[in-house]
Image (cartoon, rainbow, N blue to C red; front, side, top):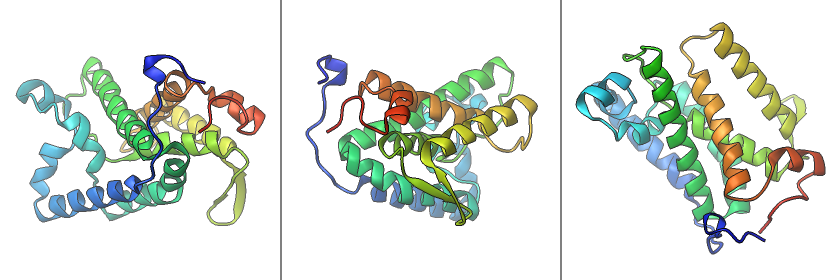
Length: 217
């Protein structure tokens, strides 16, 4: 049982916040499509954050998308995995987990971009938070099979480890430079820390024990 104030649980409730997140993303996408210039305000651009104080971009970037396929795949991730994670966590915990992971992933990316002189990079998309949700799904449902391309069954923890390895490889070797691999990795990392610090669950132990360890509602 969790005893630390930092680990104090919310009263369990289920309010379909995953669907609310999807709706907000779609609304922002439509507004950005009507006025493409608005992405300069909602995406995260390090130079604008520093020079003009656009600190809200740490939050709004995760609701901003570059195109239809970009938002489609991210929203599918929330629909298929986020709904199940929310049912297991409870809506308040899920919302804190999702927004917290996305926010911290954005801030971490910002710091790295500043130190590497990438002031003009444009960071946008829910992928950092979605990758956090994918890790949470694997923690709560370690025996679940995810069908790659709808054909090949892969255990959720194996998929998470595989994705992490791919993202790390692409980040190090600079493949697909238009993709924010660093933010994806940060989403995984902060989700991992959230489980350890907030929920008292070691994801690795959960993978090994089949979801029986740690604190469960």
